[in-house]
Amino acid sequence: MPDQKYLYIKTFGCQMNVHDSEQIEELLKKEGYQKTDDAKRADLVITNTCSIREKAEHKAYSMLGRFRHLKELNPELIIGVGGCLAQQLGRNLFKKAPYLDLVFGTHNIHLLPEMIQQIKSNKNRIVETLFHESVKSLGIRTLPDNGCVSSYVTIMQGCNNFCSYCVVPYLRGREESRESNDIIDEITFLADHGVREVTLLGQNVNSYGETLPDGSNFPALLKRISDIKGIERIRFTTSHPKDLSDDLIRCYDTINKLCKHIHLPVQSGSDYILKRMNRRYTSEDYIKKVKKLREICPNVSITSDIIVGFPGESDNDFQKTIDLMEKVRFDNAFSFKFSFREGTSVEKLNGNIEDSVKSKRLSMLQSLQEKHSMEINKNLEGSVANILVEGFSKNDQADIMGRTSTNKIVNFTGDIGTVGKIVPVKIIKACTHSLRGKMI
Image 1 (cartoon, rainbow, N blue to C red):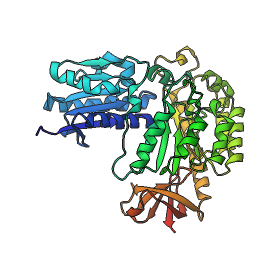
Image 2 (tube, rainbow, N blue to C red; image 1 turned 180 degrees about the vertical axis):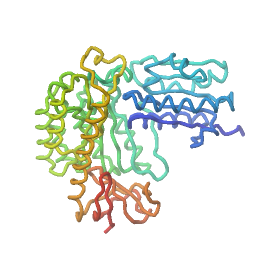
Image 3 (cartoon, rainbow, N blue to C red; image 1 turned 60 degrees about the vertical axis):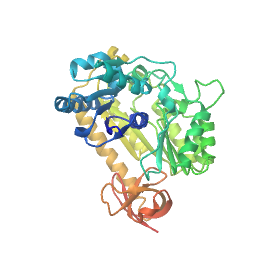
Image 4 (tube, rainbow, N blue to C red; image 1 turned 30 degrees about the horizontal axis):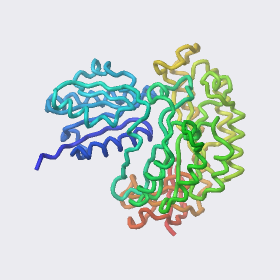
């Protein structure tokens, strides 16, 4: 019997990258690799990178630096880098980390077994960052860890929007939607294996179907998924405000399994900055869509992304973002200081903002968002919510946790045997980022 081979994989970035790592793990499992949480034990180490923001890029470099020692201890160890940073830098990554064996881009996950075998046989280094007409790894089916009742499903890859600050179209390629029947087959497979909630992934799920010849669209896909036996909840991310259609908004009323939550990145409340970002909507357009959502689904939870310190952002522009936040009152917002990404059209824009100004604005914005989040959560105290139980609480193994339809984490005392079930829980205490409950 051959010796067991071990894979250590470290993931940076968004849910798309997390699911890519799940697919890498599944693909290499068929080659005899077992996942390990101990990098020292590994025969193969893969860092799945993100370069959407400067901070994620620096974290990836730091992690790669730690692997150098492992290579010195075990010269047979194979170290690979995938994801957006690999796509962006390609062979140049070897200059930054000469102990690397493999650099593979966002379209080349499916080639991993073949490339690893070549490295073993020929003792050479490999770079593969070509784009393909179709991303073959999209169809790799993965099952979540034992007992996990939620799973990601990629429905599309790439983006056609070319926001001026964003590297995604250059590193993930142009938009490609999966055939709807393939998606339905995968989700049926997941449901048959105990999955009760799926999160549909794409850079802009709202435009799903535009590259397909059969007239498929996102609302129709949601309806088909809702008919799958065993699936209790449907989530999706991410949405572009310009493509949030009335048909999709109506789904929050007509599809009971669709969770009452939407992540709708606004990025700025200033029309001047939105235009420089090439977002193709105004702050008024955004607020009107939020109003429609709340008319259809009054308790919908709305979360967002916001960038502060974009080139040319004046104090007045920043104040317009604060004003929009006060009008919309997001349940949560992920906020970031603008960081320049090489190759994007933002290179042509003037008006760089001092880092100290960015930091001050970010602090103000985050303080306001924490105030809003706490007030919204406080209003839930005394109410009863249906919670899909996911497993043990990260904070206390004596508790279990789950999420509301509005994507709020609730920790409560209960039986681990309820995992996968939807149970009524009374909210007894609100925190900024989670809730405390008592099972009824």
